[in-house]
Image (cartoon, rainbow, N blue to C red; front, top):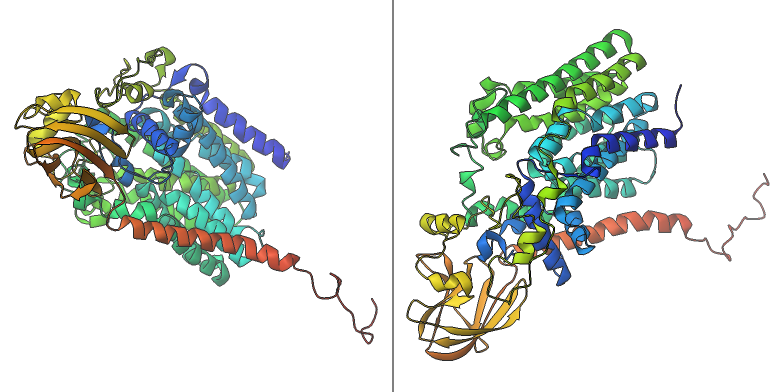
Length: 582
């Protein structure tokens, strides 16, 4: 019996609630990457509270020495966590609530995609298997890769916008494709690259049609323009940060060839085996769905398309493909070939929808059963999150800010959440010497200027008296009195920093032993201000995104305006006397 569309949507939401039940029943996410999202949330919330809405320098990261992570990490995932924090919900709870909501939304997106493709009969099964497939729960519970978890929402939206009969206007459809494509790019770049190849294969498929192909290409380009404010700094991050430590074929622990199916995965071999089994289970579901559809389903060329996409993706994550991942520049930055499970997961709904009804139901049950080993894995009890807020600290005396550490659950007893220094190891500025970075990680920095551990400024030439006059996220100032020479400021040097002494801008450079901001000042009493502003290509990239946003607005509004615009004659269509009546 075919359920009503609203009932199907309710079933999808209920399934997502069951899949996320541990996060609604007193548990919090505690997987491998959770600390990143927990520490980014208060940084973004603090910036939003001061009116900064685009990615910027995060002053409290890395023991209060600051860091550029927000500039280079896809920003969309941090926004709901920050908004919930501003509403009073701590990130440890907010991340779980958002994750469950995204499970539901991704399933609803698949419902829309399948209906737009004329597969309404199998839409519910397709949506359910997308919500509860093995890799989705690995991603959520064990990896806690929340940016990739968010990225699962957008490919179905791209495909639904392309195939849907409404809106009829190609201009509005282009705008919708652009919004979905931008969402994907702003969520997780590896997932965007890998699923983008699959989406390109669908677009180039002959059955897509020339008109929709034009819409897809135009929408993708416009979506890239919308995301330019984040794509440009991410593409250039290797210029300013030592990204090769984590994102290259020469990385000691993140070399892609180590992370092929059942690869050695020296950093975490147990997880490497577990995620490999999840991929195998996913591949088995895909094979059964394809064969069942071929044997008992109606002929449909899309089955062959998605079967081919899944087969190529699976072959590309087998061990023989490992060396290619290490040497091909784009692939070497993706870290883990098993990320192709995102493509396999995307291929599963259409193959299930094209399978016979009984086979589709069995595949949903099999997918849910295969996901059980990861259900609720690595979650922590809410009691592991410190509840009592610390007393407020005077500006410039405690690093990192105790309130940010509290909001990040940095002093949690859970090992994957624990991060009292708010360390962001993924984006280390190149100007930081390895010895100094080691001290930051150990909490003993800087040994060459120990007074900076409890002060915003210091000098190696002698003691400095200081008084904070402004202490915002991106702009700080203090009255300083001390010897002349190099004044060290407790922020890592990075492009975009400006320092003013008594209202006049002064040259700023990295201090060689520490990588901190250093500015020359004369002896005596001075007003010193330091601030971070977008640098180099960032303003241009943001201008591109603003122009693309204006274009999307025009594409959405103009077709509706043209349809509703009245014709001359008091809003009524004029009919000539000679026109026959009908």
